[in-house]
Length: 252
Image (cartoon, rainbow, N blue to C red; front, side, top):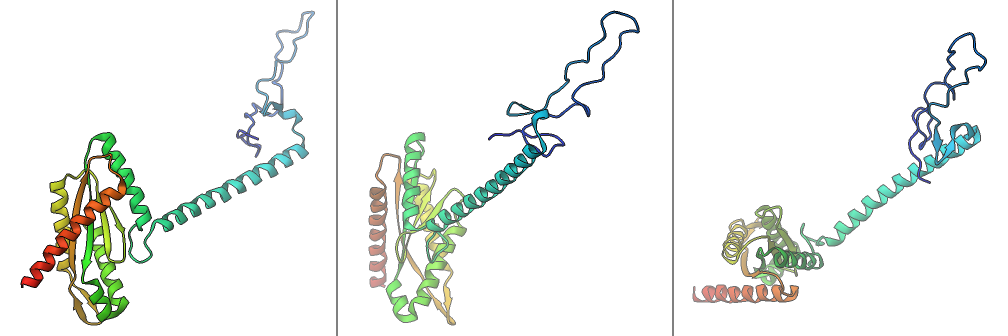
């Protein structure tokens, strides 16, 4: 039952009552005359869903107060449930190790940004990063050292992106970044800057500095692409960059 607030009565839903009685005192036009002056009509009759206040007996008032208390309790429970659902939804989107989106959430957001680019005609870019030599790090330093390297890469990416950009962990040592409203030239420059930032700050594990190498690829979308196609193109560009890095290392 939808009930409006009543001033001074503790009941929601009734309009305020003017004065302390249902009727105003009758005024007298004079002491003579055949017709007595009748009381004025009620100035304001409080109602709850059309029920006059005069009919709101103490028992009805008690029932309404109990009902409104229950309504308030239900609203509180609903608010708590909504906050809990929002927390769980956020938790379901988070990677289990790094403070970034998991692959499922990243793919969903990439699809949304591709649709945005198509609708508004503004390009966006997806970057694909891979940590070089991760197997060797895990073999030599254990998964504790490897996990620290992954967290370092994720935190570095987050610290150097705009609030509108998104970071996700796509695999064990692979990350994706969505750059909103970024063309190919801007995305390439940003990817190089991010890779250099990760590599410039070695990870310290058990007193030893772990140097981290990064390979990256870039794909710029204008809208209409399938999400997996966009990711695959960025992934292929990353592997091409990784091969170049390996060739340079071999030549050195």
